[in-house]
Length: 201
Image (cartoon, rainbow, N blue to C red):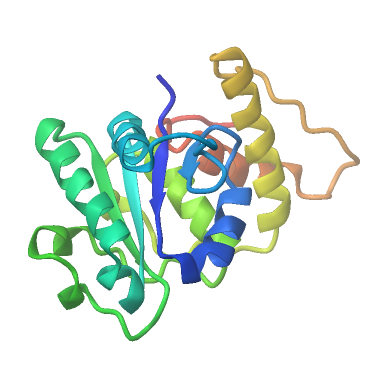
């Protein structure tokens, strides 16, 4: 089973979270309006998607934490966590006015705070959180010069995994000498295969 994340948000954050979702490989995220179909009974569909996910990511704002729909999703995430201790929860604030004290008491330990300056970095954090060990080992912001190129390469690797259900064991990086292939490859290996830090060139 491939890891998946349920993105929980309030309507005012939909545009921003949609940008985050676009930087995640197809099939990795359950996102309202894209992962729910016309005619589905919404409450039942939410329960099902949260139950299938391996991680719950709350995009926290003041309005989200007052929303009955988000409150329902938070309650379902708590049940999922009780049923499966390996079920992961992360809370990403979308507004600096929100603090961990605004969360339900059980959820406060899952506050990760700001994890980047934009949708691309948040998506990178979520991707890494899905396939690594304890969340405490994850850095917050991961900024480096070739982020867009690494993101494109990681997306290509993830798409191969999604299509074939196998991890590629050969990556070919071509180009003239001195353009930074080794440096790029080290970064790519760290991003695409964070669970196997023993990989070397």
